[in-house]
Image (tube, rainbow over all chains, first blue to last red):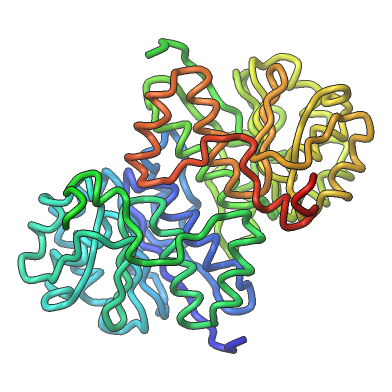
Length: 209
Length: 209
């Protein structure tokens, strides 16, 4: 097992998706000796997710947030507010170049695309908001049918539960296949280990995409 | 769509599992007009999950917690502490008879079993801790191979991600199959809609259970 140690900075915002954040981080954080996780919002407020009244506890705001190794950005309905929030987008623009990896789930990739950092790179996003999300990055090489996509240090996933498969894909890439399989079994989770598996894209775009 | 409205009381404790809580509640809470969710710990402390440093924001303690309609109990490594905590077990014993449904994920059913409330009822639990968990309820009719089990008002699921399938099963039972399918698709989640699907049980107990 790799001895690499990563601090993940999870960037949350009002009306984020609970699964995007917690299911993805739970699978990554299964390697307790290899990850630490900090949660961040713009003001440090414990913003609510889109699930009625449920929220994560937040550790830092944009001012007092320490360095981290992985920038993690979930999706959610609230993406629509942050796409128009220059302070939020500037935080991504300032931090992303300094981290080893950027991981996004669902519409989270739309936020990174809006900063221009995904220009010329392959990425994917939520299937139901495809036109809207991809319009934020006209120069991104968007992949329609993909559970998740890797391009350099950027890992982007499809909607919501796709973050779980991407998390295991990341574990497999960095720590080895055996580690990913072990986590999936312990979580009684049927891992879709093929990043090209995507029945939800076929549902929306047809079989011949 | 049913007009039923439920407040879920989610009972958390130190070293709970993030997926058990947030993935399950996210799928239930997709019906925003039908659910409200409150989070509870013994002292109201924002206890940490078993994932390094990540926690949910907590709304109530055992003293000031209002009535709710569904008692939700996740699993997690921390179950081992609460099995020896009479205050925690008494809270379950006091509240469970007053609610319409009790939903548990993973080792959460071990905690309910310990109170005696599952005696004579069918239930399931985490496969990896099967002997330990089932020993807390020798008079429970434990089902080895099951993604989730329903007996009266008790819904119990297998380990961790099984809570997601149970959540959609509950939605299907109460609000109809169409509602459950819609939530699964929106979350780009491949729902295991058959409660008897359980490759993890077969892995541990063999094919002929």
